[in-house]
Each structure stands twice: as structure tokens, then as C-alpha cells.
Image 1 (cartoon, rainbow, N blue to C red):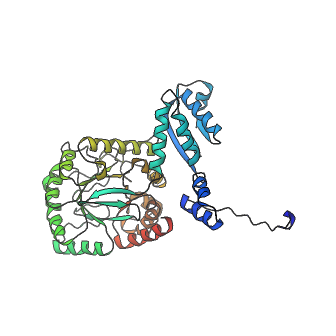
Image 2 (image 1 turned 180 degrees about the vertical axis):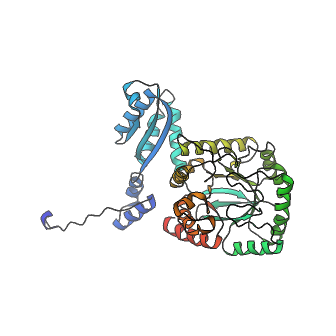
Image 3 (image 1 turned 135 degrees about the vertical axis):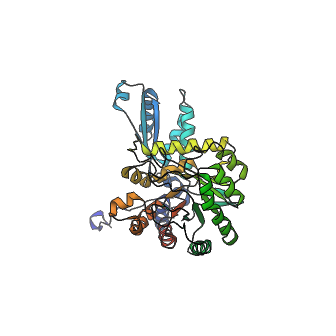
Amino acid sequence: MTCKAMQPNVRALALESPQDLVREFGRIGVDWGGVVRMRAKGHVHFLKVAHLPSFCANILKQEMLALGADAAVSRSAIAGGSRATDCLLLGNLSQLRALAQKLRRQPFGLAELGASIGETLARAGRHLTTLELAGRTVTLGRRTWVMAIVNATPDSFSGDGVAGRCAEEVVRSVEQMVRDGADIIDIGGESSRPGARPVCAKEERRRVIPLLKALRKRVRVPLCVDTTKSEVAAAALDAGCDVINDISALRHDGKMARLVARSKAAVVLMHMKGTPRTMQRAPRYDDVMQEVTAFLAAATERAREAGIAAGRVIVDPGIGFGKTFEHNIEILKRLAELRVLGRPVLVGLSRKSFIGRVLARPAAERIWGTAAATALAGRHAHIMRVHDVREMKQVLKMADALTR
């Protein structure tokens, strides 16, 4: 058959992951050696190196160009007008691995940078992670877990608080959440909505502990208590709590970290700028993902220094906690960047105000917007914190089927 007789049949393929690429190789019949080599060439990766000496950045650029890739540095760094620059590496996995190996033979701190690049690539490509939870080690990432919200408060922003309801009624509603697919139950006795006033530890215990004790007798999934106070956390742990969800990332109460370390419970460390009363007063970031990631890395290290093993830490970027609408959207689009921390990622976006801004709907009418955002976030989050368990469980099952 001559070229002139051929019928053109060219398609642009929408391959979003290495798995999609391997599947296409299989359809063609590529041998396994070729699959291994080409899989690493199939997707462009972006690595950002901050505050690199300009002469080192120029070395990186030349090395990347020699590999058929590229690196973006500031104009002044190229012209010799600045001592340092951020550097953005653009290349496929094969090229970036080759760069890491080449740098390990270089002076000026580039050998250490090469090792860091290799480690970052390994973490960024790993979605499965383990968590020590309720006395066993669980693997997260095969599907998205659901954390069900139980607000034992009279002033929840979403209007779903259980304050004033009898204990038996609340327990039955939580049992239904478990039947609907909740993997973890999260109980909170203090509202953290923007502008919320603090609650004393005595009142928070009164709201949370009796309910926790009742649930511990009837519910078999792990139980989590949302608190920043060591006094409340101690009572909760004594009552059988498995996870402490600390929105201050162990900063509010100096006794919290050691308490959690002694208990062997898991802990959620969340990013928040300011406090619930102040966090929405014109929050600003130069690079929101860089700051959130650095904060959570430092919080994880702080927990480790207090005796909390990394395997017991969950991280939360804090959607709506000291973020504007634009910040929340950017974090959700770039959640995959948190993989570099190597810890399970929890996301709570259910019914929040950024959804209300898009839909122009009150909190009680944001279920469909929550569903859309949950489907997007569930691609990279390990756990989603939700109000509407039955509906969001279905959303996540479908999203997992499409993306995992």
C-alpha cells in the first residue's frame, strides 16, 4: 500500500494518567520493556525549586536542555542581575530522573538537590499511603474514604447541629450514616465557622463526651473528635476516641501534642491562617500551595518531635480557613501537590461558602455544588469530610470508578 492510498486516521488522545498510557500501549501490543521505558516519557511533570542561587539555576537549565527538557528561571538570573531565583523544571519522568542522577555528581549543593528531586518524584507518584488507625494499619488510596460530620453545636454554619436532640435519636442517625457508607465519624463541640466565638472546655466536654460514649457502644467505625483543647481531647481519648482532629495543627494548646503522642491515636493537622474569629480578614498569600504545603510539612515534623509517628498523621489543607474564594479553588485544583508530604490528605469542603458564592444558594441548598467539588477533590484526597453521607458516598464511588 502506498502512502497516497492510505486513509488518514489520526486522533489526539486524552490520556490523563500513566495508567491510561499503559492501557493504550497494551492495545497496540507494545512489549513490556518498551512499556517500562515509554511510560516514564508520557507525561510532563513540573518541579519548582525555590530560592536557588542563580548560577545553580543556570546549570539546571543547561542540564535540562541537554536532556531535551527545559527549566524556567527569572530573566535577571540569566542576565546575572540577581543572586537567587526560583526555578521551574519542565520534563517527563525519565528526563527528571536523569537530571537527579546527573546532579548527584555536581558540587555547590547540587548533589543534595538531585537527591531531593529523586525523593520528590517518588512521593509525587505515590497515591497509596498507610495510616495507623484504631489499633491497626490501614491502606488509603484505593478508594476515597468518607468522614461523616456530627456537629454537637447550636451554631453550626450548615444548620445541621444535633444540640437539643436526645442521645438515642442522634445515635440512630449516626448508625444510619455508617450504613450509608461512613468510614469515620467526626464529632465537634465547638463551631469553627468564620467569626465563631470560642467555647470553654467544660461546655465543649458537655456537648461531646456523652455522645461519644454512647456512640462507642453502638458504632464500630473509628470515632474522631474535632477539638483544639487538650482537656477535651483527654476526655475523648479516655472515652474511646480514635482520632483527634485539631484545626490548629497542635498550636493552640501546648499540651495537645504530648497527649496525642502518649495515646497512640491518629491526628489531623490542618492549615489555618489566624483563628476562626480572624481567619477571613483579607487573607493573603504569595503562593497559596507553597505556603500550605510548607506549613503542613512543618506541622508534621512538629508532631514527630513530640513523639507522634508519621504513620499516625493526616493532613488537611483547610478549605475555607483563612482563604479567599480564589485560594480555595486553586487548592482544590492542585491537591495532588500535597502527595509530596507522604501522608493521607483529608479535605472538608461540604456546603462551604465558596460553593455558595458560585451557586448563590444558602448552606442547606449546596448539595449539588458540594457533589461537583467532591468529585473533583476525591481524585487526590484520601478522605472527604461530608455532611450528606449517602449522597457523597455515591459521588465518590462513581468518581473512584472513573479515576482510580
